[in-house]
Image (cartoon, rainbow over all chains, first blue to last red; front, side):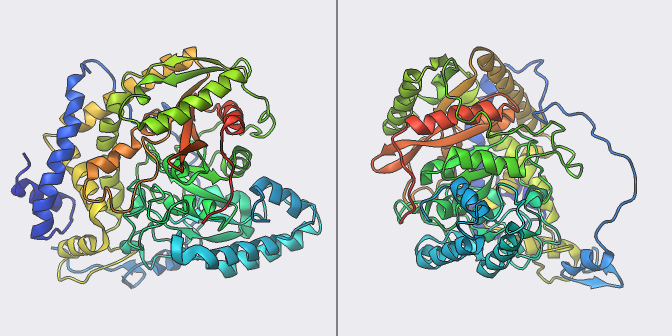
Length: 93
Length: 479
């Protein structure tokens, strides 16, 4: 069982605001989903390597050469707030 | 003109028998006719379609159009389009206008005749297109039912003739399942075959861009247009792009086809199994060698997927923090700003999956969930390797049911996740898979799924072409 306290802890890790109603509903739904996922424990996976990418790619490198990219002005054009050519945010607490 | 396939329309445009502008006008008219009932688009772009079609026509006079040019296309709203609002079906990107086009669109140049940006489940999370901040899309076959998802807008638009073909994205079935439910063809290419640059990421080790079309030939032509290596996507494959049309009509004679027994059990509606069985029988008549294949871990694939995909989502959606783009809610401190912005901007399913993924990756649970799921993924890949050493193509249903009623599963996330049961095995393995309409059950379309090994799309498309030819189904725009 996931407690409300755990739900709030995970929401904080994800920087996600939840209403009290969402916290209680989310707990039950996450429980149900995690219960169904428990099925995986039936499997003996000892010694099986994990897969992160289906194509077996290892580090893909390219030459480290400068090339044309977005200008600072256009990169900032989508920002909610910008000051002096930089992204602006509220006080960092 | 509305009854032509995209390939047939493309040939007419090249021959000068029809102008691209006439096609764009016809698509725009169709959007006006049906959109208040279907709601396939978040942002229709009629003027853009006309302007670019005009430029295609100007170039057509000198010859030299590429074979996919000029045919109006529907683009899922998860693909970045320069200067055209791209929302991902989310409130958090309601006013976001990308600064560049997705690389997959590059072969259309500046003249992509785009009908509009299609509706979708928020950030491609869902199987019904009901998780959109812009209202649900309705299935053109029955307006009381869902079109599937997450590429339900693209599927419905193509099924309704609001464009001749479309692009969707598939992480765990999001091209194939809506294609099945709307009676069109949906192709998920091999992972890495199409660049993901400019595709707003959901599950980065799973996401694939794919064609949603009227027939298999159209899917092959559209894949030709979007496939290729991209130095700006380090996971895109450095593998030559073959000609997908050359062998298309080669038939299935001598092809070994395995029916996946784990995906033909009682979890699949009887009417769906019947249609799939009939198509397989016809393929055998046409010369294929048919047998039974087994993917033992298919029973665990869905569970593994619902750990891996949310884990990747929770990381990918961290970028929506009110700093560089999208919504920002005002607050005194930056942490409160993050929390309020994400609370207001994300819908229920996005929140649920962020929570699930963050939990699965958090300290103390990583090994129990994420690491185990990655091992199941390895097992799934081995299952496919084994099955594909005995068969060229594997067949299953695409979805466990026909289109369900709007609202039927919205309160039960697990029931909704079950829609992906047949689709996720191929996603975990990164192999190509295509859904072809096989016929009707209770008057609604049923999709037949064909899967094959990495980068064997030419053979897969050839088998799918045969499957659509033997199936009991004819495309025509609805409603």
